[in-house]
Amino acid sequence: MAATASSGRYAGKVTIVTGGSKGIGEGVVREFVKAGSKVVFCARGVEAGKKLEQEVNSTGPGESFFIQCDVTKEEDLKNVVDIAIEKYGQLDCLINNAGTHPDATSIDDTSVQDFENLFKLNVVSYFIMCKRSLPHLRKTKGNIINMSSLVALIGQQHAVSYVATKGAITSMTRALAIDEAAYGVRVNSLSIGNVLTPLWESNASATPDYKKAIQDGMDAQLLGRMGTLHESGQACLYLAADATFTTGTDLLLTGGAELNYGKKTRIGTSS
Image (cartoon, rainbow, N blue to C red; front, side, top):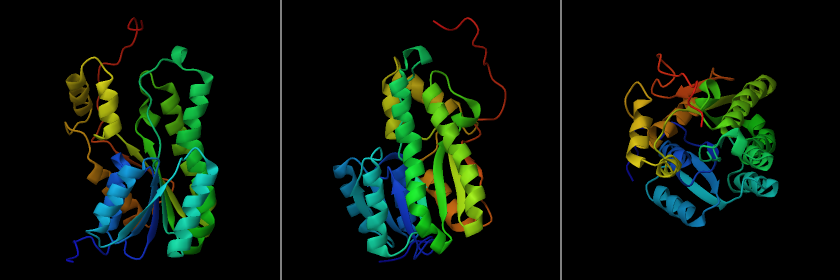
């Protein structure tokens, strides 16, 4: 088959992607396979995972291998790393992406158990995958990319739990970068703005006006649109393949959403 322009960009490298069957994770899997990487990706949904595996393997030039996994279970995460090493013999890049964003909920309506469950999914799974992957990444002087969010920096209404998880991810990334520099392992995070994913669309559907929610999402960026799955994958590929003198950095993929003044007064608006 004819190689694409980026087919050699990450050739010979082995990558793990959590939450890789759809959304941003899907975009990452596609771009890394296009760049020649061998990609082991996991998710809960078997049907979507197998479909993506088959599709990207038919085009190459890299390849993918799907593993069913519940990232809230440590044994499942350990299994993903073990299989990747058994199958390919090395690990060059870990991309922690699995997670969720609950519907807008005030702290009054968020239980302690809800808060703990979200941390287990969004943060503890990242910690476990880093811990399990690092012995192998140190051998290859590889890198870790932790998927964070712009809201870790600017906050978000009715999303205290989610924002807290993403803030933890960004901070954990910086601390880990310090420790792992001694081994030549780079650790960076990617903070996403509004990227049109199935989860974003699902959350928009839960609002009274879906079209308005989508338009508001686009209007939040200076560029006037949402990001794409392709752009998310390309940003990760840049951090993995090209940003070889970059560690402890939080790369913003936001379309400028954090810039400029805006109407922000919340006084008198709480119900």
